[in-house]
Amino acid sequence: MARAVDPSNGTRNLGKYYYEMLQSLFEIDTKYVPIKPIGFNQKNYNIFENRLDVLRTLREVKLLCHPHHENAITLKI
Image: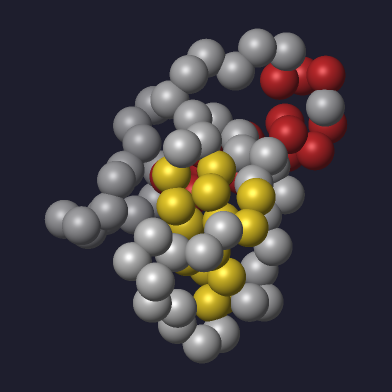
């Protein structure tokens, strides 16, 4: 799970929250709140046990098929 932290360099941006998740520091706008990590370069076991995770994974796969830009990752299936 994500836990709120202070940035390591001591500088905070207004309107930003800092969270540590999976040994990485994330800076996000205050209007967003992390729920839980999904997909972290490991095989996801039992993804069909949670309907919400299935829908999120399907949405991400569909979205990754569409970008056609040199700075965006495109999923080819």
